[in-house]
Image 1 (cartoon, helix red, strand yellow):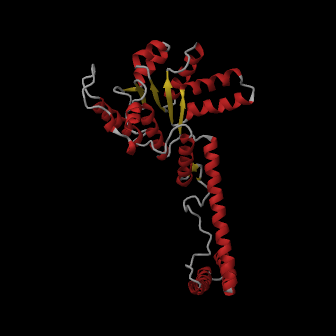
Image 2 (spheres, rainbow, N blue to C red):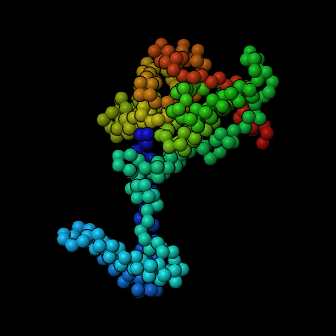
Image 3 (cartoon, helix red, strand yellow):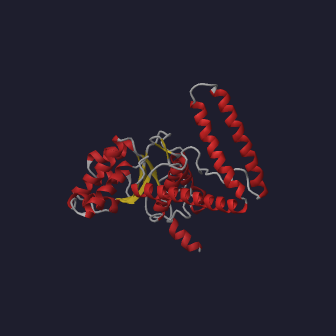
Length: 334
């Protein structure tokens, strides 16, 4: 799950700041408890001494190490009991002055060996959703808030089913795709249809759920994506070029790329090449992609190069959107 470096950096900083804040609170509590009951400070020093003695007894040469360990352990237990009584008298639990990590799995480091701990994954998901919200209105856009009642129940001309029935099918496919991301046969989606029918809304729903499930998600428009590839090529030695290189790596390597509004860009030989690089690289790497477009899959085949069109047709599951413009219906109901 190659999270964006900025997302990982902010999540790691959150983890570090949380751990530091917790240590500082414990230290302030400890100092206050020592002030109110000086005996606690003496007990803590003696307990630390008995722990060192326990280790020394275990390593002692000659004599009976088992008996020595048992003796030191008994001393430690007596001190712990007295400490617990004193803390209770102050209205504190017996572990109130102990340095306890929030995550016992990684002890607040964020990592278990070479793998990312679930605590850091959760923070990355939160940061990622915050990042996505800059581009998508994720405050309201979720599967739970999707309104199917905006879609007509009348059979749509030339389709044989109503827009509502069609959207129920599209909704179910998108929900299963996101909820079981990486575990369903469908790896890539092509959302096709006129503006205002919910393609971007469902894309945002997918982005939210997949991100909350701990996967790296990148959303951007076709125009912005191709612009970054252009900057990477023609300004490669500049600061903008270096930043564009990092952006294009995100597009190519994230678990899920959502490419919105394909077909809105000016189609040139360069954009053709960039689109092929995105689609083919992600297919070869086994990474998932959702594309939304006002173009039908047939129109996309006519507009883009044959090798791109064949991959869209063969490797993407197409969802067609039709009906009345939902944005206008919502506006009229206000």
